[in-house]
Image 1 (cartoon, rainbow, N blue to C red):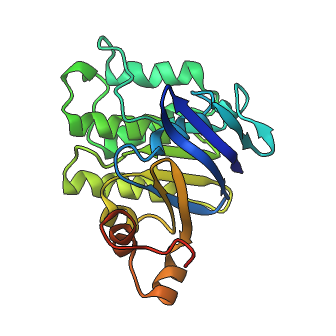
Image 2: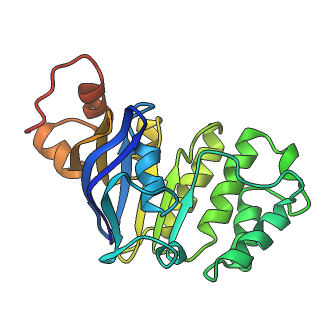
Length: 236
């Protein structure tokens, strides 16, 4: 559904994404993994048609991403992106104006689940409450692709449980879910496929169940092998 072909993004002398060819297929929940500066956010923003590549391409159902693909791809960034004057209700109204697939009914249900109220002002929300609001407004869309950048950041264990349940409810054979996070153990409970990126390059894509059976390692173990000091053969 989403395919990048030799995708590259350079910022002056730094190459953030370096020739990444990757296909995300429906029916999977992907974990995009790597330390800060690996290129995860840059790849996501290009796939969401929010940033232009230096070279290569990103396709949604065989066509270059752009205005049309934004109608089907829901992207949640790490940065706050609501105006300070907005209430929680205003955020839903704002999304409803932009996206035809946004459901006000679903949004209200998610707010209740996340223990958020419409009258709350976004400027007064804690980091954890803001994280839950971003999840609620993103998942209230009936998108075909959901890309969530660091959805578990800044929130406690119980809030992570709420967010994990919300994400898993959207998993289906017809949709793609892509998450990035530094909380590898948390991601392993949600995702079925791991995408490892290092210094802008795609290292490998692994089905987690097959990796556990074949290599007898968890996603966290593999993360340590790739990004720690252990020598790793990328042809495994």
